[in-house]
Image 1 (cartoon, rainbow, N blue to C red):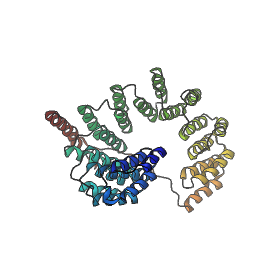
Image 2: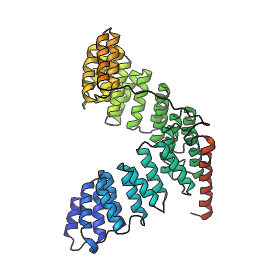
Image 3: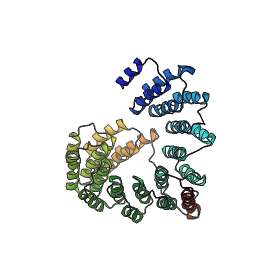
Length: 433
């Protein structure tokens, strides 16, 4: 970009296209603040170099990347001043994306309501914003509204809607979306098969997840295999997950970071120590994948569950990075399993400093004290939790009763999603678009 800036500075005259090229270049290279600085220079040119759709939308993309919502509001004002706020769809979509990604949901909704012309990208941005804000019910409602509004969903729409269905444990809605995916011909889209597998798995329907895996058109996609391996692991079928991983390797599909997290978790749950060691070495030495903290935590958890606390400690000492809370938390759980009080106290002390608000660490150490008959220390820890107003998070279970749910997840409420999508496909075919 330094060379581009030099060429730009040496130009005798600069039109809006030249300015735009520089803003876009900075934004695409992740140099968001530089992009915004150039946009400020451009805006200062006044009527001589008027802003256009590319100028404004590129600046808004840079605001999104930098998380600069206040600057984004200024760009919004510039867009409104030159009449681009609502007339240019790419600008209104960029504004909507900026507000949703920066957490300004009220401004995003107000803008969405003001936009008359909404394409599938407009709806996708809004739905994705609800997902980002963990408003999964609203995401599903907006997806349904999009279909009712006559906008045919694309693969991104289906992926986000399936993600929301998975988080809500809304099987009926997810199954209806699955039917729409088939009818619209998006089943072969990259990522959709894995979204379907994840949705069915989260809803507790492993058989449906496996059927979605079997009918997936792109069986050489790592995401599809990883989703199925993860589903098996999360349902407690660690051995089967490892078998599927081996089949995946035999087919020549290279695993990624997430694949190895799932397979190492499977080894930990199933007590497959030697295979866990083998896969960790395979990841680092053959596939040259740099371990995440999740990989380290899986290995420590595996050793701790097997009673190999010394090996777990040695593994941590050999790590190339400083162990974080997830790794130390796995070691503390291993101390609990092995009833190692000395190491447990040492690890817990470090965890109290790293994440003082995590009640699980206090509870684990208190349980270690209790297992050694040291009830006074255990009670003292619980008093410390009370004094710091720490509470163990209550568990909850989602139960989807179709006749009583307030979510649109009952069959009589969501079956029309598939039917409306089918009608949109017929209209699109008839119009030849």
